[in-house]
Length: 190
Image (cartoon, rainbow, N blue to C red):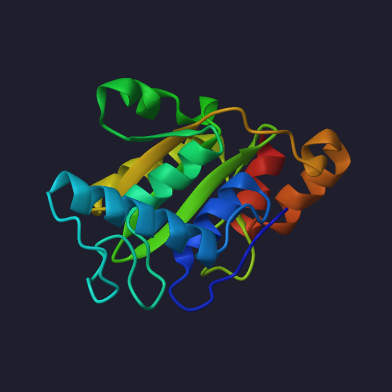
């Protein structure tokens, strides 16, 4: 399973790559997207100045990127990213296991949840390794995150099948490797 670990404040880069299960983006690409958004915002506000001293609301010097950058980056790859609670995502919390990916943000940290095959994983770049998330726990986790003030987004699109999804034995081994002992015991009881 592809899993980038946290470097500096580049959690948005890691979040996207972990969600897409490949190195799809780097900080330069996201900075270019942020600059384009900044340019369009200045044009819309009537300020045609292109001044390098102007601060950006879409990227900070430490590498933190705004939600607008993430939404646009996903759009460039053919994905839709919708806020949980919007009209398009009305029934998601009733059966979140039917989705393929979520991105979450709170306190300036982005991370993703991703389904591979029939299994869910928390691929937070702050973790040493991804964490297995059972279907029953997924709904509770999303509700708890939302209640704790996280912004939760559903990501939809044509996610290509990863190599590990094509090999059930390897996928089962991944689940075991990413499970804590309590979750592993619960799985064995099922």
